[in-house]
Image 1 (spheres, rainbow, N blue to C red):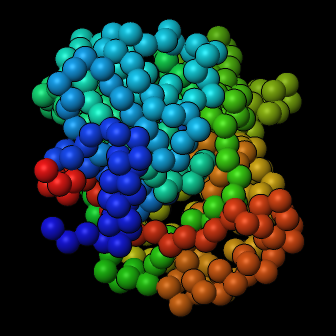
Image 2: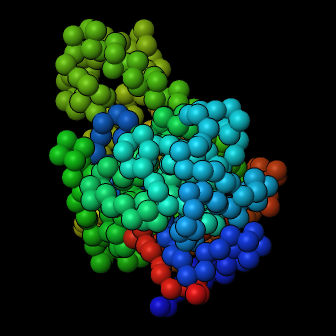
Length: 416
């Protein structure tokens, strides 16, 4: 089995972590889960919109092996100070416990708790080590980890769930109900269903996935991740939670006023949209500003799909840039470091579009770039970003990503 250099480094890291901690994964499996790059609609999932994005090659790798006991033992190479997370099946802290709020262990605790609650009771413990290279904010690190843990622990116990949307729901429940993060399903869907070289189109009304190949005429397109070096502590502690509550508040106000809607995505007709603004904008300008972004993003959604199919790079970039301006000015979900990255990228010829990624506030921005402009983008960021944010001069990075499968399993890499 031929591995990429990135995968080989991760395998070596997992083996070393196993030796260092005494956790036995020899002869076990490695499950790799991707990050994601949303092309539309960022923050649309909890507002009911259709979604479109790709899996990207920043990953979580988890090496695991059933240990013949009823205990789960895990160690993270990214959070070594937390030590080995060890617990018995059926014996985890209560949801949202303050004692685990600052440890990555809340994710495996939450997975075991949620699976048991939903009737997928685990019966086999594991030894496991985990390592990842996904930036801390914007590329769905928590969703990737949660999906990986669910799939790996189910596999270790020989439990199969055929309905992939059930896996999505379980992963969301871990974050919503156990951790207290109010995430939607965008991240989980874009990772679990991602296919190499394809865009993933999710339609919530039909609960369907459609794969949209990028036209071969767009071979020049590159996805750049502009990692600001900042780390967002979690959606439950960010502006994301506030924005979601604002959108839900506006829906409630509209329902009380007699509008037959269940979410902001239901407002697609321009006449209806303008009527709502005329009635509510003076009294609720901030809430209506959130609606302006969602409405505009929905109008651009199918234009993005068609541009993607046609390989129309200029239109893909323009829509992505316009979306970023809406997220910044109307949805107000961005942050200063994110916008510095976007401002820098916007000055580079060959950068087609740029915007913040993910939950907001901190983390990574993204850019769609012509291949020949990658070095110019890196040079521009190196020259300008450390001057604007010197505290992150040794933490920021520009990374070029490929479109990949969201989930991959390697067997036979960990020896016997």
